[in-house]
Length: 384
Image (cartoon, rainbow, N blue to C red; front, side, top):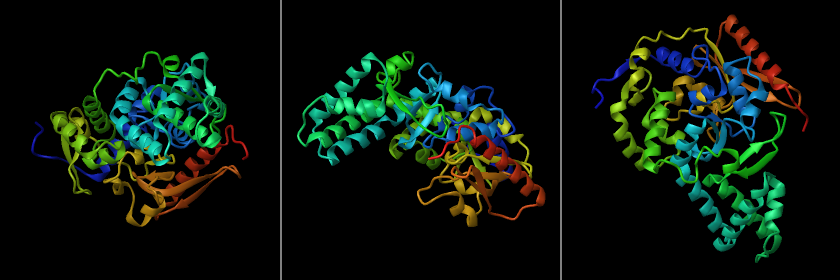
């Protein structure tokens, strides 16, 4: 069992450790798989988020490399998992995340089936038709839905048939039977194409995975604290969407592999992978001029909830997080939020709002990093 004493850390040590671990001026990923693994998945609910996340950590990042990694023969997988949101993961992490979060996603689509009053039998027939259509090859999403919705006559006509087709595709994707790829050449647009998972990743088994639900949660907890520690148990529950009771049971079995941590700025007990304790203990305070740009819904901010106030002042909290808790793009100075930035696609510019007092040097640094982000975002930019 872990020691009853807690590793005591300052906020400056924690921010230096975490940002370095996430590739900001420290352990910069040498390839996209390593970058995805550093965060246990790159958040991808918005099209631009993973591109900006990677650029912010490595200015030499080329958007085409991520597009290729997510293509039909690519080595990364985009799937809905933690909190039923899209993430880009390595194949190994994808299996863990998929199995640990499958009940919450299956529950959602079954609830949708009942809420809409759709026939379970008709839905199953539409699922079978989706798989049959995709046997011959990939299909663009709208064309796939149109084809499947015409396969059967259903009570309620074409409107209900389309609802059944949409839910059939969605549920098969959630179950892991389908893969989705984006065939657009622009990081600003999406052309979603579905294919059978065995045609995309024959070596990654999501439908009949090699681990149980309980084992997957244990692995997810250990990966979470490896990537995001120091963090709290409630941080993990919020980030993952796993039921509290299931997560608590898994945490109890993982405690021998974790070290408990206390931050001077936070009351709750935090956890860290035990093997990282010595390295973290030796971590210096973050430089007050350290400057880092984060993407909208950047994993370095999105990875926390209970303890998220540690990197933003109270009077800037609502500027950083919108009404549904999404993290806006920001610039961190000295490890805490100093400015909020937004991409104005129509005018091809980045707008910046400084949210705390800063030195002239830091203001210039913010101007530099946001100007660089604007130049990056103009790549493949289109109107509309």
